[in-house]
Image 1 (spheres, rainbow, N blue to C red):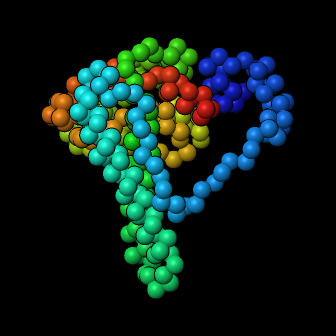
Image 2 (image 1 turned 60 degrees about the vertical axis):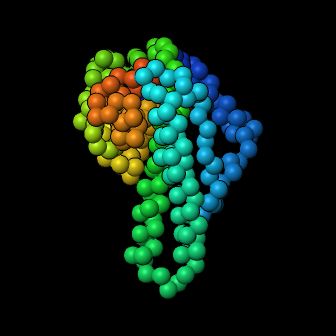
Length: 238
């Protein structure tokens, strides 16, 4: 049995359902419309609103959430759009040296990573709620227990405290396992892995609330994880 089926079974999908799903896949494909593919140079990415009220989280203040969303995230959206405009014009300039063009592509990579990771981050936050039992069992399959998974996730975050970076729980498609990843910046996303839970460890995420005491922010983040979103991302990934 392949890794995808094993992971789906952990989320409560039976082998019968999987077989039936395969038999009807052609019919479903006919019902689905071809997805719209946008231009690589489109400079109209919108600023995504929060899916919760900024004053509803436990231990992460409205001030921090609002500043983080309006300044850091929204600033990256605006910068990414501006870079894409410049890239389109630069590509049409046949006299531009490749190394100059690549300066823009480097900025494009960083801004794209910032936009995507911030959107994942805000979407996996919510007022404190219950964990997902099926996801707990999947984490136990990869880490031995939910507690062991959380211990490593927290330890990576603690190591990034006082600096910059991200912590990511992801489903690695190549390896067929759930893993936690250390990321130094917006460009270090793991290869062939779908992000499930993303934690921003840049100081702008917590300094106004906790100053240099990153541990308090880590505790607060773990209280405010939207486990429903994380479980849905896992189901979509496998």
